Length: 140
Image 1 (cartoon, one colour):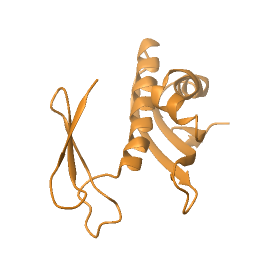
Image 2 (cartoon, rainbow, N blue to C red):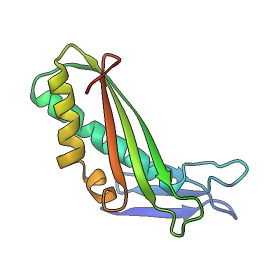
Image 3 (cartoon, rainbow, N blue to C red):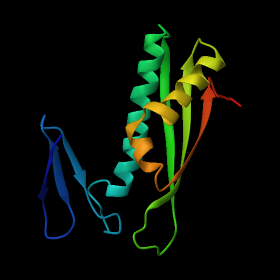
Image 4 (tube, one colour):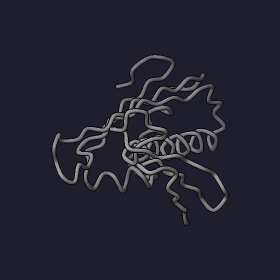
């Protein structure tokens, strides 16, 4: 797996491209008009995407029709720390469909606790917590 990075201006705006040619723009979020996600935001997008793929795959294998999947991911950092790594990450996973609460919870559990490579990397520095909602109901 390889990516390329190219600087686009005289500040912090970068274009990254993977081997397939997919482009993602990065910028420094402290700039007045950032033109891309910050690298730390990309990590949160990465855990959301990785877990989302896992959840869809797990439910598809069970022949479960998932109507919708959305997430909110929040990363917690200590102000002024250098390096300023995530110390906590909280995911809220919103699933919609006609299937059991147990299957919804189990799919998310398997993703975060076992399959999501991004979560497994980030858990080395951050405590990862999550909540699962099925059809707008918080599951315990």
